[in-house]
Length: 255
Length: 336
Image 1 (cartoon, rainbow over the protein chains, first blue to last red):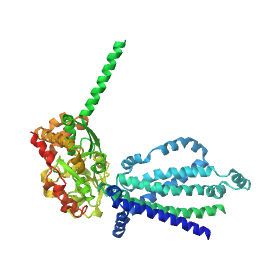
Image 2 (image 1 turned 180 degrees about the horizontal axis):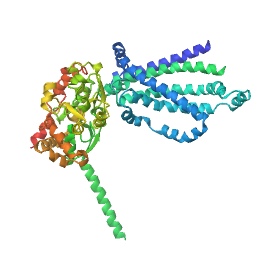
Image 3 (image 1 turned 30 degrees about the vertical axis):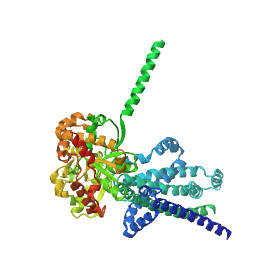
Image 4 (image 1 turned 90 degrees about the vertical axis):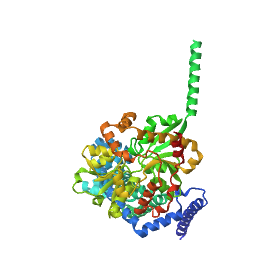
């Protein structure tokens, strides 16, 4: 009961701060303390978002971005987990390719984006590759670390009890790595979105990145910021979903 | 020994003094160009620089080249550059958002950006309506070329959701067409001519000519020129007048000299392959505004275009006279 009250308190504070921030923003623009041209204003943002939703304009573009993002997210995650396991169970491979991974991860992918466009065209593929290139490393490093951090005692005990390699992987390694992988998934959702949006921003005919680039060309800061808010809401929603999933899995791991 | 030291010291002091005086003499201007260097629609800037006209006016021009007009336009409104060679579109779009810019010199009164199609599709694409649903390139989303593309397609009944318009940059139009990323593009010269000359593209609509422009838009179409913020014009009219003088002089020089001469004057890296360059500028000659004056009529065509594609619903209600400022050009023209 007390805990519930405390969390309600926290929620109250959050809402209060948000309201205060929006109010300050609105008033400063209306009073002319800051120039609306650069920062827009909350009431315009709400109206813009509503117009987009009502006309369905935002959904058409959001759908495109989500498609690129999800494909990139899934492909990047699978690839990351796969290579992570490969590295963990084949130390020779890990030792040979370790420097390559570090070097590839050091590449500034956002700067590489124009090259991706040249290699993979202006369609869906270049955005997916962009997202994969960001997601892969986050998941890979987490999986690899997770597998290496497995408690040696548990592994040895399982062995003594006559566990086969397959059983070891299934009952010891995978559950142990799960927590690591899930925490990396929450980070990589954001990265997948960055990949998709940056790709669209550089060359596309639809998607939220295009919407934002187009609005920038019209000097329309309201649409730019509204577009950002829409993306923010999507990531927040996905993060919430993943968090629930993670809780579910960590519960399963603990038992 | 001390004598030498003294002479060196004296020389050093004299040299610094001279440098300070030199710097003080020349007025600094942050000048943004809405394209990679060497674009035909901004060639006045490159020529004025090469001919030393900016220096003659006592200006120290810091030229900054942007990826496209929209980026340079944003920098102009934001205040990181003071003047910009750019399309009049940005004056209109800024006005729509409550910011005052003016076009003070005209460079081109025809778009000067042809619609070029990959030769591969010669049998399939006979008019802009055949581009329905296919990827087509413009310099950047929402830029002046984007507007031209939208208008040409919508005029022939293509709906906005059937358009696949992609930003491919100015000089990067060459790989975009060659690698088949877009089937067609509205591009800037001399890069379009490069494609055509190498057999990779053909011109569908040549907006460098008065004939094609009139057929599409019904009249002259104000395209590029010099833009400045209204408050800078009021605050630094002296600087503005000097820049305008130099560019008016360049426009005059261009009208008086053959294209071959332009190629001689410009730095060789801007000209590249001389024959192609000359060919492209000969084809563009009709676009250049010899008298440097932006006209109400040509600006009105742009406003009508904005309204027709629905980008600015009531654009024609804007007063074209409030978008241009010809005082400085008139003064420059009176000088000689």
